[in-house]
Amino acid sequence: MAADNAAKEADPQANSLTVKRPLYEGSTQYKSWRYSPEQLEQIRTSLNVAAVSVIRNTFEADEPGSSEDVLFLNANEEQLLVKLYITKIPQLCGHFRFPEEVEATAISYLKRFYLKNTVMDWHPKNVMLTTLFLATKTTNNPISLESYTSNIPKTSSSDVLDLEFLVSQSLNFEFAVWHAHRALWGIWLDLQSLPDVSEDLRPQDVYDIAIKHVRASRFTDAELIYTPSQIALASLALASPVLAERWADSKAVAGAAQPFSATLDPTLGSIKYIITQMGHPPDVEAVREVDRRLKLCKNPEKVPGSKAYLARQVAEQQRAEEKRNKKAEDVRRAVTEGGNPFGSELNEDEKAKQLAELDDDD
Image 1 (tube, rainbow, N blue to C red):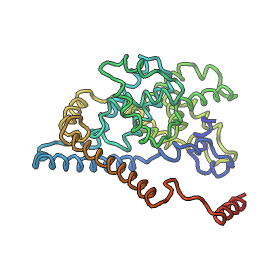
Image 2: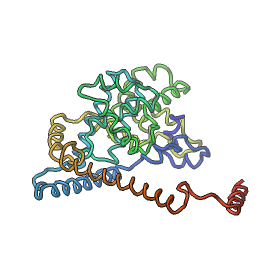
Image 3: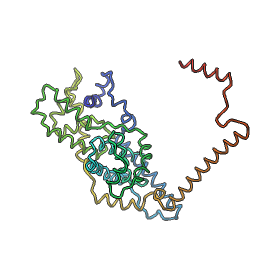
Image 4: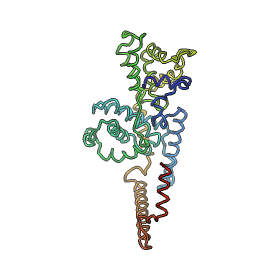
């Protein structure tokens, strides 16, 4: 079914003739995590500008004039650092022998997290470790926290647990992810049933090459812009244009003015460009320079032991104390004034009214 979605998603006319909507369109991924390239740029730039403003003000509050010589990261530099830690996830998955579902899900979580947060607030290293651990649970491939952290140098349980709720919250608690590697497998199985595609036309190495392109796409923004089926078909087209064209044409609506593969060409062309031009690890030296500068412009409120961090801790404790005192005072006042802190009992008229409302709902 995932394979069929590529054709429907790329052609509005085909969608209008189809009564049944693809399952993918009912997913949280379709509703919450799709963007245009322009939207992605705007989101990341806005986050970066807001973070720089807050951090600059924090520096100035601690020591006036201290932010003048700080060279803050821009949005592109933040993405460069995130991309480096995306490339670390396949390495860790290989070490732990996690299945591909865990790897792909963790990468998706990491990308989504940094559409709500910046690296100047939360360094990607521990966020990456947390998204991977979370992915083992959400994909039903659990590992104990002790086994996980003990196999990663200089990592403690708190490095993961301290961020797990923040990561989940940033994901809107939407943990299900639809992946291109599953869509590719669906297309590959579909090809085996096509009468004009012999076994000689679809050797196993074509699939192997296509899945490599799918994995390369994870280093890019492709999954935030295009659907899994579109990415899968573009990856197949990079491995075998003939097979991709025949599969696409097999999904054409009867009486179409042109082959369906021609309709798909613009979309697939954009995805292929992204995969081939951006689907590779970043330059390590460039990332090291970004990471070095990050140490100088990281939000001091997130650095344990700093003045800003300690001041924030005190402020949070004061707010929590005030909240507890207010609640205790509300209970004391209710008891003193003869009221019931758990609320007053309903009188007979109120009971009758609520029962009537229940009957109306039925």
